[in-house]
Image (cartoon, rainbow, N blue to C red; front, side):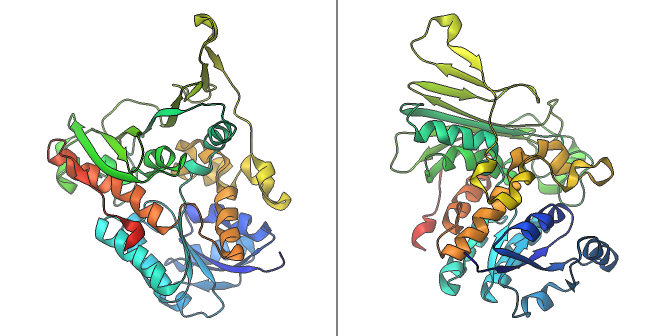
Length: 374
């Protein structure tokens, strides 16, 4: 494949992590960058040798040379910037979550169909080495019949900027919803969620969300499976943990309790003391073009003086960044839907939004829209 996609990155905090990946991808041209703060725009542009620079997002979208935008702006801007880009005829990759309302999720799915352009939510967990390991076990039949899935995302967001303080936990749930839905490509049908505990009053009043923890059960459509996910953001003592667990009839996979430990495989029908064993999760750089394989092991933010909080607390996101970029570029080159596509991303994002609504209603069952047939 000799074709190259002209990529523009919007937002140069966490977004800068992807610049060298696109620069070295054989089918990408790291064409332009966009940042409101001109001094930061020029510093990053100079560092990476990118000549095309915009402080105005609208000006970037008016550039006919831009094929695709990769949005890394603050969460409240995701939906508006995504819709603008799709309607301007650009493909879109966007960091999580897709949007902050079910209505905006629906609008983005509609816009992809109307524009004929691709959308991909850049959910790190479904390209992390742990997820790829479990996916490989599942596809080889080693798990047997999958019986249950569970995931959590616990994080102390104190000190994070702007829109984070007081955020309802399930409003940022794709890191735990994505893997439980994504492994078997399941679609969430309805959700029930409970809130537990309370955060400090000064935080709770920001979003009128009192809960320290939100825990939800998800029922999947046309499947006998359900999943359990839980989230916390403030006033809960817990080391960062983005966990994903799968229970099968032959083997089960459990995330380690402490960062740095190896995960556990449980194998059925062994003597009790042999059922559980720790395993080392392999790297999956061989899935990638040779030019970008080295990015599964390190990134821009490995340096202490350049450490973005999401990268430090996220443990490097499981080597997912080059896989995400490669999936997006490959989908455009091959003219196919990326994973997750717009409908899948809307489903995963809306699980969290509606889970919070359920928690406010004492655990009421709430149905998800059918995003595939909008």
